[in-house]
Length: 211
Image (cartoon, helix red, strand yellow):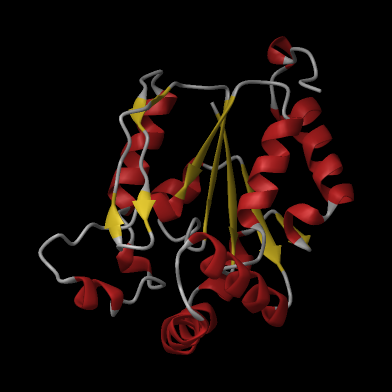
């Protein structure tokens, strides 16, 4: 199984890049979102969960992601993970993800765990102007996560920006390719899709284009 890692700041376009690449890869592909692997804290009140630092590496269950990748590599299905951003609680589904020829892992700390990083055949770092990332985050959090501007500002200044400065921007040093403009950069998406299909996927698995 080919594993592609996508890392970058919150709002940089990682998810869009992952979806666009999946569309262009000729083989069956499974997407794993790191933000579905947050630790669950049922013992805390909503206000206590709301105050957690969701942008530090320790907020994520790196062991669970690693074990899921190992299972997929071994040809075993995994339970799909999910997270309710309005309640700040895990809400794993009853859906089982089947092994595929390609797995795409995307998240702000996708390159943090050296075990996961060593499994990746291609590491992409999405580099976008921080102001653009913030604007995208505001739109997303209001539209999809039930947040208001005050809540977004508090979280951005309190955890998002400091964790980007301390951790996330340094992951660029692990990247094989730096992607500007995220998944909206159609030229780089086409180039990466072609590279993956012709250079990384074995010739015997070439298959037919999906579009």
